[in-house]
Length: 402
Image (cartoon, rainbow, N blue to C red; front, top):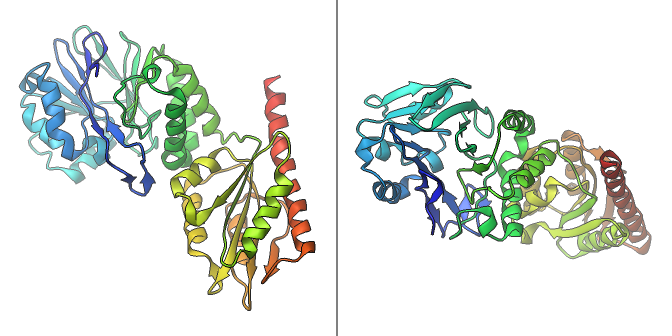
């Protein structure tokens, strides 16, 4: 595996091939914790790694220089998957000064005993010379923690972007153009949807800051490094940050004795028209990670559940709780479902739709026990409404590009 991403800048991170859960994020392709070493008059490490991988990071650093000769360690983000091994690194780098912003220092002091560390608090826009290379710091609050920061090296036009533009993706390849681009973009979308989606305004501000920089490469803290498709990932983030939807319909449901499933099938039949992508998603058989990824660019959703103990099915309750926290916007929706002797599920979904302020396309669709033909026909008509909303999104997008 290559280690240099530019002359005198080496990757010294670690691949975590076997992690499958990242605080409820389904990391079925593993992840990486990227750390970078700038070899210069004042050698510098940009970001550490997760604590269990500290020794591996130090061995990679030692393959280039003695860690005791490090002048600086930059901490762009205090979350433990990047700063977990920071104490081990600072102990090995006896002469190094930690560079971070004030909010990051506050967070690190909660995680570590920093009393013996050399620390310099840096401000947004501040620059530090390493010799031939310069470090420029750019605060990016809430992308995705309050202390988040970018570090830019103008001589190489490389942006070290911490979590922004990352992917939970372990690969033997270091760069986007040495990987399957479709897989990388899919994982970048999943990463944005499940981690960054609530912070669209902050992402837009960070994109504005990045837009003024000549960019040859974006080196995130997870996944592969962008060097051939920088414009592609920047464009994707612009669309995601404004909750730009596609002509896409999701029918998300859970069922007990197939009554709700029959309604979902009828909704699908009505929505399945030319120009619209339609997906049936069984909440109990789909990970929350995949669900959030599909919700990111969906224009319209039908949300349905059977009634269990006057409530939604547990899988739908979990799904809607997860989606609420991610705060997707510019969506339209409708509620549907079934009940026996006591209602509850559809009413709860309807209330959820109103609370998240999505456009509600029509009154809820309810079936007591088995849906009859008339109700299934109504479901097909409601599916057509979903498709029309999705098509209108597609027409607006086409008009804006004309």
